Image (cartoon, rainbow, N blue to C red; front, side):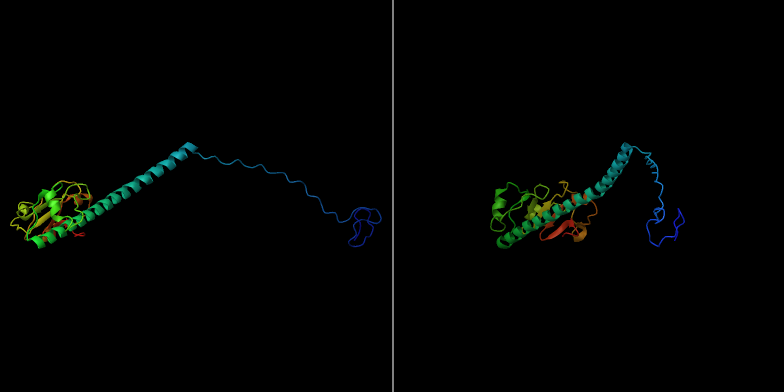
Length: 217
């Protein structure tokens, strides 16, 4: 190895030339790096207000679709529950009436809405039923017809003293223009495909449903 300044021979690994004193093996210096200019970020062609409006519009559409599906389903579920509970109350009334008829050989006197009929309530409570349901799950009176009072109701005829009729006017509270066909006793049972189907009356006649949803009877 030789000194690059004076050409004198130097030992391997020596830091300075022993003849001229010039430093040996100095790493070359690198020129300073010039920082590159940072390119400006591209601006969106949409303003902040426009973006907010698009997001809000999409959210409104989504909520509208959700409401269109969820609300009818919730309403139908509620009406189903009201129908089932009303039918359960009708069964309770029917059981009390049947027990009364078994003991007395005839139904108690009753013709129509029984709210406020102290005689009818006293005939059944508290011996045959502790609490007499007065209204259906829509807050409307039940209608009860006993014995020959059943004749003429929904096309019925030939009722005996042991017959009885318990009625709820359904979701809309309007009496249905429907008549019982004794030759086709199951013709009054109906399917429930829409909310309007629950407007139909619920009718129990002497131990059997003659007007009710097929799936709940």
